[in-house]
Amino acid sequence: MAVLRKLARPLLAAPFVTDGLRTVRRPERAAEVAEPLLRALGKRVPALAGDPRQLLRVTGTVQAAAGLLLATGRAPRLAALTLATTLVPTSLTAHAFWTVEDPQERARLRAHFLTDLSVLGGLLIAAADTHGKPSLAYRSRHALDHQHPVKAVRRPVEAAAASTAHRAKAVAASLTGSH
Figure 1 (cartoon, rainbow, N blue to C red):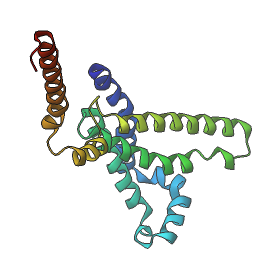
Figure 2: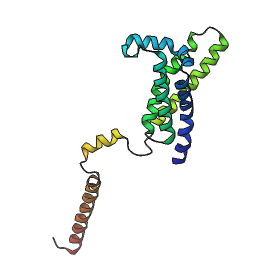
Figure 3: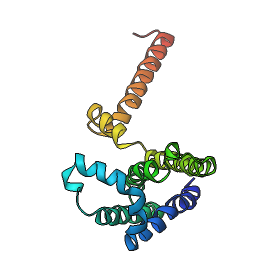
Figure 4: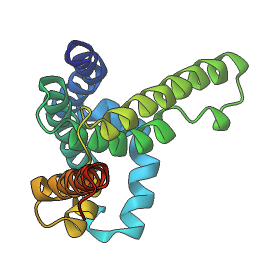
């Protein structure tokens, strides 16, 4: 499975790195598409009401950085979750097929939107991937139950061994007739 992760992560991250860098260099292209969303966000969150190109540069930087982190396996769960978070508004603005009347353009945008949905699914799987290790939530829940994990494992084993030894002594005592 480790080989599969080392291959899949860069493949999943590649579009985010390239698109993020493209947006950082030329935010004007993305600004045309994202302007309605950015205006709406600016009304609700005044801190985001500034220059839309600057906000797009920040988003592009976040996508490129998170893509590189995912591709290299550094903080892959956080990187995948960050990419998923940036993908949702991008998909809703860039591939809004429900707003287009032309059937060919609508079909093209729908295909891109569905592709983004599948990438979102892959990112969510990557965000949940714990490499076969217990998640932080699992570890924190069970840390409260067991002060020391090694002792927690030994206790049932020691109890079973003591019980078996006690039964063996009882059987031996009944066979020899001594109590």
